[in-house]
Image (tube, rainbow, N blue to C red; front, top):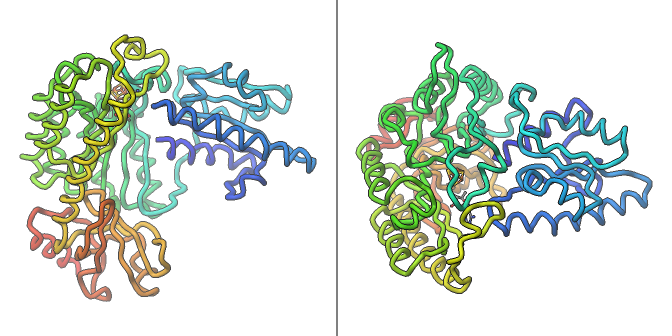
Length: 462
Ligand code: 5AD
Ligand code: SF4
């Protein structure tokens, strides 16, 4: 979501004459868009600010200025404190008020002093942002929901991003159409708790995420849809049905469980048990047999015993993830878990994280290896590190590398091609385009569990 927000900040500053630069030392304004989710992320901000401080001093010495702004959730959480700790910062702006950047710049030039805006305005920033039609490739993010009302006891999001808010369906559809007009083929719907989406539909009723996905899938040219991040409690029937029935909805789901222990899940205020999660995954796999599953895990939550951790390993073994993210518990100021007195020692957290990651990495490698020999539809998104390479995504979110002659690279960039997978790596796949490139026109179908059906679907448009 910070990537999406950063792009929108660039959009809102463009009418003032600002444009992005790769040369940070020559920038008239630098905005650090920040994340507060774990301590490590938040600490990075201050070390990066130190670097910006000297760049700003260099510019001053050359008689030029640099506005230094901090945006995002660290700005929201630290507020005034940030201006005390780093007084050379000119502007502190929270994630719900960055649409006011032009006003804040004007205010700064009037006052010549610090400006701070960490409000949660009554009217949404989305009503004030310019249209998002600046597609920068065939795959794009689209924010549909923000904030969270779930209050997991470890998490800062409900405090930094604020209460749940869902954008109206017609605004989302209009943004998706604009992205499509700019060449976008795949859209990832974003929200801190995206499957809690309940936006106002064109019929005046509340629409859930499943309904929204069906509507977006009807837009000609949008060939792939994804969404992230979800809470297990908000996986409703309509959403699971959409997985079964909407071909554009990719067979991949990031569904964080955090822990496999019921005691820890209760202490985390997740409001579901490990078995509830097993049942949800069961239903999803019945709806989409080849669905690739991803998750987030926290090890070393306060009070986590060896048995609790063993329950997590057992759940992971049963679920068989295609990929996952795992973190050591990080006490976040202001959250209920931070003041619990049964914190887990750092060494224990490190040991558990290493064990969990070993298991998850093995599952990911096995998942990638099982793709060898299959033909997967790959959306070719960008150039690779080698000149003759293109990189795309499989339906299961794996990065796929392929080498192609220049003419084919140009023609196939931004299209979906059938790719025969020839090798698997820990974090990616390699392959080659399956059909005679000249005869193939691109295509959008999802891949079934049987490789033969893939060739059938894609070959049909050749
Ligand atoms: N400590 C460690 N990990 C955390 N996450 C959120 N808060 C914390 C924390 N205090 C992780 C969760 C969440 C992901 C985005 O970050 O796993 O799903
Ligand atoms: Fe944080 Fe997600 Fe829990 Fe909301 S549901 S409080 S965003 S971990």
